[in-house]
Amino acid sequence: METKQAFLQLQNYIGGKFVSTKSYINSYDPSTGEVYCKVPDSDKEEVGAAVSAAKTAFPIWSSWRPQDRSRVMNKLADLIENHLEEFAQAESKDQGKTVTFARTVDIPRSVYNLRFFASSILHHTTECTHMDHLNCMNYTMRTPIGVAGLISPWNLPLYLLTWKIAPAIACGNTVVAKPSEMTSVTAWMMCQYLSEAGVPPGVVNIVFGTGPRAGEALVCHPDVPIISFTGSTVTAQRIIEKSAPYCKKLSLELGGKNPAIVFEDANLEDCVTTTVRSSFSNQGEICLCTSRIYVQRSVYDKFLQMFVEATRKWKVSIPSDPTASMGALISETHLAKVKGYIKKALAEGATINCGEYVDPLHIPPNNQGGYFMLPTVITGLKEESCCMQEEIFGPVTCVVPFDTEEEVIDKANGVKYGLAATIWTRDVGLSHRVAKRLQAGLVWTNCWLVRDLNLPFGGMKASGLGREGAKDSYEFFTEVKTVTIKH
Ligand code: NAD
Image 1 (tube, helix red, strand yellow):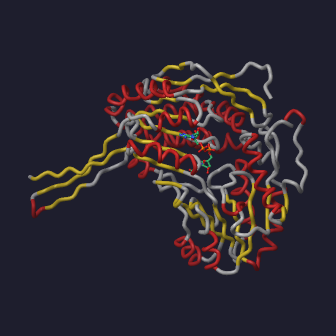
Image 2 (cartoon, protein in one colour):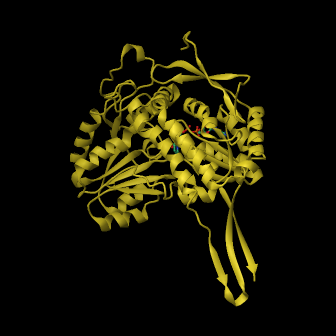
Image 3 (cartoon, protein in one colour):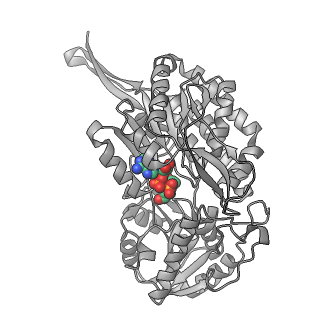
């Protein structure tokens, strides 16, 4: 539904300048379902111009001292932080998340990403070995690679974009970034501060548009040797295929089907509070969200009762409501997809314990066109059900009983994904044993989404390729060389 208001119109940012495009696509406010923004529908030509600007800037930027790159990155972080409220409002309007979430998670973490890599670049060292019997010394040298292509999704727009831009430019690369066409506004806002921060023209270029047009042009550009991608596994498979002829270096952060395992000795109160958060934060639209909860049979009934009660208190409302725990889903299509999974579960004879089709949803009249739904808890599903196997990426979670440690490890590992898992127990030995055997890149015990950016982040199996974090991102965004000298 299109209204007659004046739309916000974004422009690409290429070579330090805002540049118009030939055509635009609509971007919707998920809380009303109305178009509110026009996003450039960039193609090969615009991507080519951005790559060319990045290529020109590379020799200059890569020759800057790390401390100078660090200084401008810190300045950019300060500028975003000084405008935190504007960024939070924009992120919420663009994505449907609550303003509170954007204000406390998305934007502060974006600022921190820049500060973290601005600092970490100052502390890397390289290796050196001596072969005295041969009078030889070996050392490794790391150099930036060139133009990095960065492609990010819609769920945590500025957070995930800066998680790529920061390490890439800290290491001395220049970048062409393509944010999701559905959530482009905060990336465009950030461009307004690049020059003031002192980032030279061409170091950060942002090209807006769709995946098949702008994204694929970036993936297939011969002058972009590295691609860092966060998004769905299906898109990653296409990127692998399209980039193969160029032998590009790829970092892929993909989907998940993350289990929480609740053992009978768990502190159920803490577990329920955190598991509601881990299942439904950001409308369940975080790759790390819990979507399968395995509960040991002796505490299953108690857990389920407490969990359903707590989920019913997880308030769905318009994003500006300060009491809202959840806002709107990203799009009409995504809402239909998520609800479709609940319908499939019903058709399989599952029970909806709370949420969609069971409880009423109260949304104000002006927001009836928005993409809202209730957090939903399903039981009675078999392991092979699509709700238990596929990534739903919405506020839907399935609760299943289990009897033994062996059984639950098999079930937790019985999906194609391997991103994150959560264990709830007071038994330290049990926690270590299970963590070791879970096929997941991240395992939390008695907590969720606690992140030290120094340590590796990423998934196993269909959840990704490579890791991100202080050391891993540094290694990805640089090329290593071993030098041997005989003296
Ligand atoms: P998506 O794969 O549809 O899109 C991600 C990005 O890729 C967008 O910018 C899109 O325009 C672009 N794209 C689409 N097709 C492309 C193509 N052919 N070539 C190049 N680029 C293309 O994913 P999404 O729906 O935006 O995001 C949700 C997915 O992202 C979920 O699967 C979620 O689990 C995953 N995700 C993973 C992480 C992680 O760190 N592992 C973090 C956030 C989201």
